Length: 424
Image (cartoon, rainbow, N blue to C red):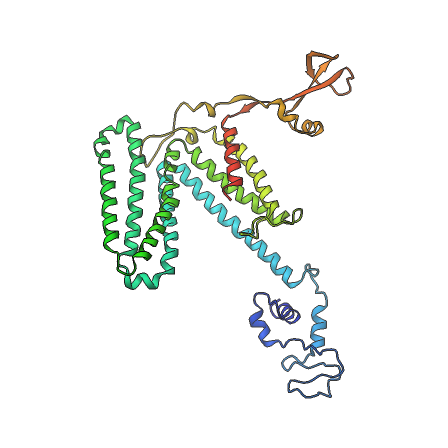
């Protein structure tokens, strides 16, 4: 492939060299525009009488350019004889991407499930680690951009940024810790210490504010205020957004794990739909900012997420480990026992009849669990399930009753819509 297909691809289209052509094409002379004419010039610009057909000979291979091109254009043998070099490369690249995503996805899901099984404190530690890495990544963008200014003129630049982050995290986490202590009577002996948290948070804020002002440099105040605003914006995106996520973890792991898994399902289903059906039915551009996204991927991700949300919530609602709230800090938690919230109890749910009227009757009859209710003998009060072939029955309405159902599944559909339309 490297010695045959790549040089040919570079020769036939010198304006769009595929990856890897730069090194391989350097030793392969391009096809002359005069190949095939009766008169051709050699490399010195003189007429070469020995090559009447313009068959200039490669010095290293002893093969004329016309012969080289003719052999190259002949279909190769093997299972991929109908595919060009670029198509084979693209096919192998796609398989490699699938394998890489599958391996990395399984690894991350395994770690996530292990942490979920380990307990609530480990999930909170993961959230804290993610916030630290996210803040570091975002502030690093502008630090690298203006490093030539910061290094020589602004002291304690990164120190003040991390002081602001530590102050914000302490205030946020202390609020969460105080709430857990108040809800657990066995931890009330810590209330005297918990009352000191707000004062200490204000002390941290005041100290950080003074240090930030003290490091202001004449001639760079405008730049430093700009960087301070960027730091505050990053704190709003990281600490501000995730302020209540630890509360959700302690209110029941399902309120943390379910939204996370829905986003994972949406991304996975959208990617699978995109690589299999992308731009085969809808050719209009989806998002200009991300040209690789397609309408088929978006629609497939939405359908897959709705289905996943329905069944994931059904599965999680059966386990008290996912549904029971906790109010203690335990590195080695045991089994959880509680009276589940009513949304985690099985219930009977009747789909409103008006919903079925929006769709064709033949389509509704194909939905599993739908009952076609008819009037008997024209009496509107006499209703029974329709019997095929009975002329005395006339369609009245459709009914669908779910008994093996958890109310949280309806909530999961709302989260699935959010994950499908907003999260991407």
